[in-house]
Amino acid sequence: MTKHVRSVILIGASGNIGVHVLTQLLAHPERPEVTVLTREESTAEFPEPVRVFRSDYSSTSLEQAFKNQDVALSFLNYDVPFDRLKLIIDAAIKAGVDRFIPSDYGIRTYHERYNVGVATYKRKVVRHLEEKEGLISWTSFICNPWIEYCLLDGLLGFDLGKHEADIVDSGDDPFSGSTRSYVAQAVCNLITDPAAYHDSKNQYVHLAGHTLTQNKILSVLEKVSGKQWKIDYTKADDVIAEGQKLIAVGNPWGMALIVRAVTCGRTGEGEGVGDLRYQRPWDERLGLKLNDLEDDLRATLEGQFPIIHMPPIIIP
Ligand SMILES: NC(=O)c1ccc[n+]([C@@H]2O[C@H](COP(=O)([O-])OP(=O)(O)OC[C@H]3O[C@@H](n4cnc5c(N)ncnc54)[C@H](OP(=O)(O)O)[C@@H]3O)[C@@H](O)[C@H]2O)c1
Image (cartoon, rainbow, N blue to C red; front, side, top):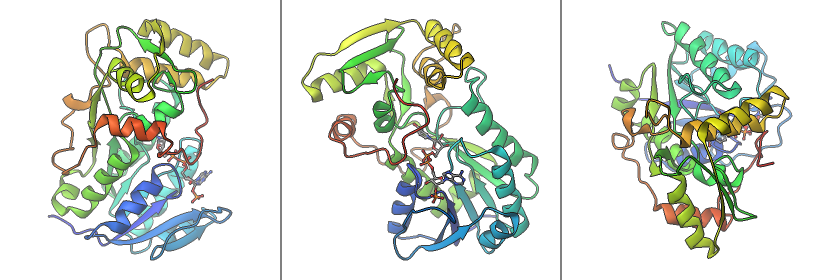
């Protein structure tokens, strides 16, 4: 049976992706009633007509926040302890929330090649939801790198300041990626379309967005910046080994290197782990509109897509 979502609560809506979802949700003609859950000590401000619920994240407060909410969406980052996430999900169940949308929004966290902290943490959250499937449903978005964001933090291998590129293998292996705004469209369209909402129950929803290669990005960056870039080529296995070495000494940049190598490179068997076109993506079904890649990259260089909260790892 399809369900019309009437109320949603956004957790951490003042962050890098949350702001985009909130803005687009408020502008949506079919929008449900929107509440945001924010920390008591947060200085974040939210536009009218959003209802703001300030919480100390105790079970009692969370349960109260989730009362009469159909869908809870988390936009928390992976530095929020797993126990806090568990508390949030358990409170949503007690309050009778129909669907929980956890804060995945990146790589295929269930894929064995991404054996890094961020993937393990996010997979653990979805596993917890899988265990609770009789009590609450879930949907989790896999969208790969937000290109405008991962160009700025360096994860994709480009140093915009120095005009230097670290290319994995040949740089010609396709991978998927889009922008925060594109991902926000998907979230809003799924929530406001009863059939898509129904069909996405207890599933990962993949978004392919642009089909990129590092060389394709490089050629657009060279064109838009009007500069010739210095290029270093490294084998994916060597980048992974370097990432593991950094992780072993507590340097979180190692995680970014592993994500880059697995996403932009190829496995020995030839599979492109980062190419989401083969994961039955939902882009068309959700009616998503993709910008021109050159426009997205030009806007990034012009500073039109700022990072709101810098990530724990940025280009060293
Ligand atoms: N695909 C990509 O390229 C990419 C890039 C970056 C991040 N991501 C993913 O996107 C998701 C969201 O990340 P983000 O960067 O948007 O998050 P963020 O901006 O770092 O944080 C989101 C919000 O979480 C709240 N918050 C912060 N610390 C908290 C705490 N200890 N307890 C409770 N709430 C806390 C804050 O909201 P209040 O102040 O309102 O409480 C904050 O605005 C994560 O899963 C992340 O891995 C993906």
